[in-house]
Image 1: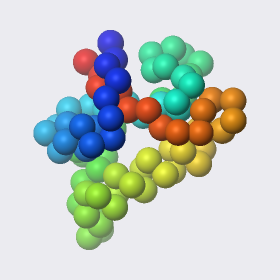
Image 2: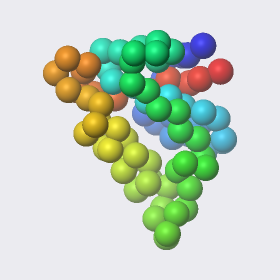
Image 3: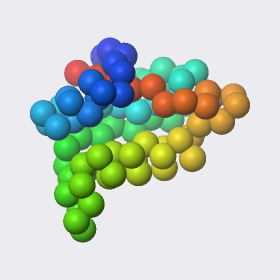
Length: 82
């Protein structure tokens, strides 16, 4: 089950240790054909001296590069996953 949230709330929830799913804006998470990725605070940690904000930005930018296009949507949507 997924609930759509905004980027600021996604950052806050990840810092609290909850799972947040990234999905292209025209897609919805939970369907096997839609690309999504679930991230948590362990995937956005202080890795090699990179702070949380930079690591989060890098993950979102990499997701956008590989999964967002004209057909799937050019933006990233954030979903709280239960």
